[in-house]
View 1 (cartoon, rainbow over the protein chains, first blue to last red):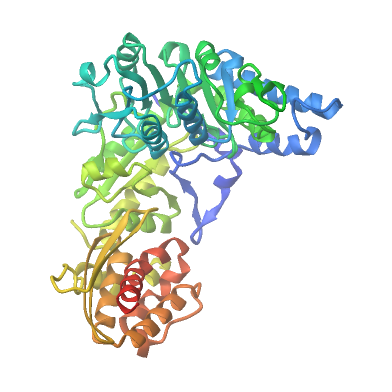
View 2: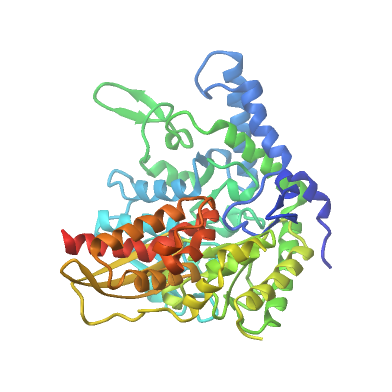
Length: 415
Length: 144
């Protein structure tokens, strides 16, 4: 039975906008970024209005209050993913988180590192942000980059996992949920194989953590990254989580103020994590804003959100299956699948599909979704993607399906 | 509907039946341009005969706007002198930057004026310019 989340829509000011004439905004581009509730906008703004000052520095009241707000945000984030507080590092984005970890793992001074002869495993359905940093690490270190393939229905092909993950493997960097297909990967199988050979698992949780409950202990991963802005939070803040024992072994990737234990003209030593990985004055207002977003998600409930998005996904998959010439790219069933649906319209380029949908006030993503190698593999120029969050409802799907019919009429394709 | 100002009939016709699509053997140069934000690609072969644009052939994948624009461009520029071609190209670029304020010079741009509406959709301007920029690049290299 589906849950009614309609009372929450009013909390998101942007959803009251009319676009392209008198159309109410139907925002289905949550895979790219989510909208923000009033409480998040207020939290970020109030930081500047009341306690703005550089955290962990000054000897004054504002610095004390700002530091407290910032560290409370860290604690809140840690609880959200089932982690220890000191294991949560604030970055500027998930992209920065993944680059940082790849850089730290490539430093020969790190007590756990990737070097020539080692192997790094990714998958064909990674977002560029969880592909290119590893390509670059392989290039710098002389390690070999290998990858999981995908099956025809858009799932991870683990048939060769026993050879793919072997004793040379040092890192397995994988998406939790594909931003193109919505596929949730079989993580247990991957973590078991990786840990059996002493490799670490880096999880890109950008599409999962904002949409369903994620617990780093249950998932048994070693590092995890996600962005604040996809989780109802502000832009400019991301999360990097790592196990304490691993964070201790790693050299930081960024150097500067705040991250040191001691400094002389000849050299420096590092503070303990998380400070070691947070050089410079951090994005404090954004971290506090993200904490308010986490409060909001917790208030609605991650289980509730996941159930709601599953209902919408099913409604859209069913609806598309009834439209000729429109094909879902990715799993057609609901097994291990999140609230992301990619599709193509025969004879109409995704960019043109998106343009017509926009005319009806429907915001979707079109193109290669920063997963260009995947599009090449599928022999597609791109797809149109609808992705949900808690404020979407059944009427949004009905409107989308009707607009897809209009796309076909407009471009005179099919019946 | 606002959309009709973008998707003029002329554009949809060129999209369905593009002109000079399919790469010709004869060429002085081949260039490949793509649009990394949306993945659209155009490969263009250019053959000059002295100052005259003798042949343009192209192939590509992309949206209706990018493909139709490459089609119109090739039809318009073949047979023109290099100087005339650049004049037309500049007029087309200016039309694209007009933010919907210009209807374009039909004497100069012919079917190209159908793209005037594109200038109201900032995200699509780069689509309309893809083939034109490929020509600009190719011709500049040949004429250098």
